Length: 178
Image 1: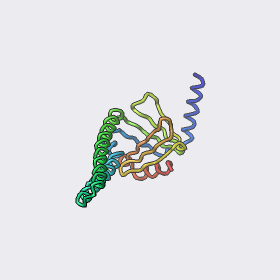
Image 2: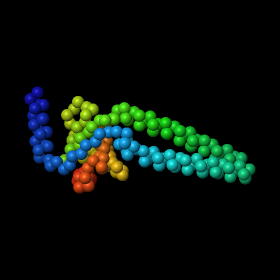
Image 3: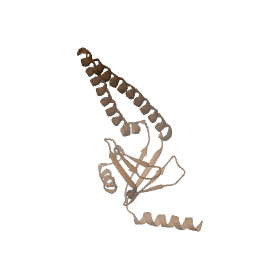
Image 4: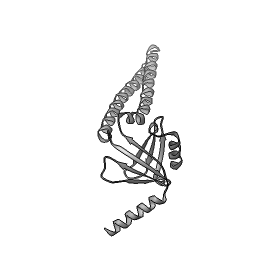
């Protein structure tokens, strides 16, 4: 118990030495999921639809030119893309459902310091989880959110909703993340 108390005192002293740069919070919802993943999925669907239409067009041209082998080939590619389209649409819906079951209405608060970010979460019993910026793997910035992926086990994704934070704070957060 004394060792735990010494560690807690060290943690408090370490935080006291660090300057709090910014704070932000998020309550996960369907809207957050869509802002994180829906635009990529729509882009994928658009590309798949364009491929399907192109393959069908080539198949029709091959049919008109009596090139039956090409007709079968392009028609087969169109069918494969239709199947891929349906499978991925189903996966997206299932992933969204699972994500909402796990994270819907979970509140996370982020405290950004000079060399780490502390995270509190309403869905865990732990008081706080610390992520060092040295473990930051990737930053993905979207229109509505910034996703910070940390190379931890398991991988951690911090989501910053831009509409929850003023521009000056966003810039401070970007600066410490880089």
